[in-house]
Amino acid sequence: MQNVKGTYDFFGKEQALRKKVQSTLQEVFELYDFDGMESTVLNELELLTSKYAGGDEILKEMYQLSDQGKRSLGLRYDLTIPFAKVIALNPGIEFPYKRYEIGKVFRDGPVKRGRLREFLQCDADIVGTKGPEAEAELMQLAVQVFRRLGISVLIRWNNRRFLGEVLEAVGVRPEDTQSVMLTLDKIAKIGKEEVVKELSGKGLQDEAIRGIGELITMADPTFEQIADRYGIGDSQGALEVSDLQKLMERLGLDAVCRFDPYLSRGLSFYTGTVYEIFDASGSFGSSLGAGGRYDAIIGQLVGREDVDYPTVGISFGMESIMEMLQTRPIEASGACVTVIPIGDTIPDALKAAAELRASGIRTSLDTSKRKLKKSLAAAASNRIRYVVLIGEDEAAAGKVRLKDMDEMTEAVVALEEAIHQVFRRLC
Image (cartoon, rainbow, N blue to C red; front, side, top):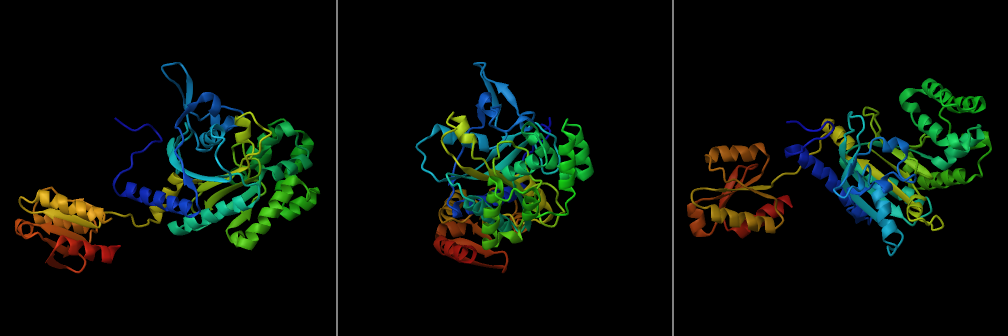
């Protein structure tokens, strides 16, 4: 018996840490006034394979299946397309609408560090805001999330519309644009020479290959340098880049956000700004999150391309974040109090534990019936500060024995007083 390759079970301290990361994400999402959502894991294959969805690259990794009614279905490979479906099916939703979702997605792709076949995505999206303030707000959100997790990040960003305008200026045909973007997106991984070699095998015109070669040999070009070189400073994509860049400078986001003229991301549905989040130290190569603007999907899915649904989103890679935190762990939460019955006092212990929990104190109940010395040692090893002991004498008197494992003190008190002391010191 073994797990399917690329899938894992999580429990104990690792699961506690995962829940802590999820709680951090949820707290920040709600702090920014995003509403929670749960979309369907199973979806019609026609939706997931739509030309407006993930594109050929992602479809190769999609899990396909059929039900007893012979209907063609698929497991969601991200949370974006199911979210777009929800908006399309509910025209009464008031815009701008901000939603977050934390849920599992499935991809039958290569397994490597930080990339699994069954994994958790944590998304936040804004529908109904055309301006760069939506992208800026999501970047602010990302910075705050990673600050709380103790991870310094670098956000690389670009604009696909602007990149398309650059490629057109160097002679790339419209039908080749998407393919060229996918290759340019690999430049940090495979290097400039390999990029040119790969492009040469795609049947591009010699003029286009030369133009791209000249573009990628520019040393860390700024947006302004590229726009001036190709005379496209007044194009729509260039104006979008300029507006977002000015806004980020005013917000101080330019300290952690770097313009990357070759970034395009693999999914073809992005229409404007795209961004990817990395460990600032460079010691961890996988992306910690990514996102971008996708203004066209929802209208196309409902067959109303005349209706405007400007949308921008961000996705946090839970598995990559966990890989980072394995080397820089944050303290996982556990029980604050353990209740230990001594003798025939289990009903009293259950009642005491229930009242502690009703007061918002995380409480474990030790019913192992092992020697008290071993139970106290177990509590100490789990860093539980308080132990509530209930022997037959304490039960008869309607009291408990509260033991402070840090200060090595104990006192017989009423349960209400024990709750007050624990809550005051821990909460």
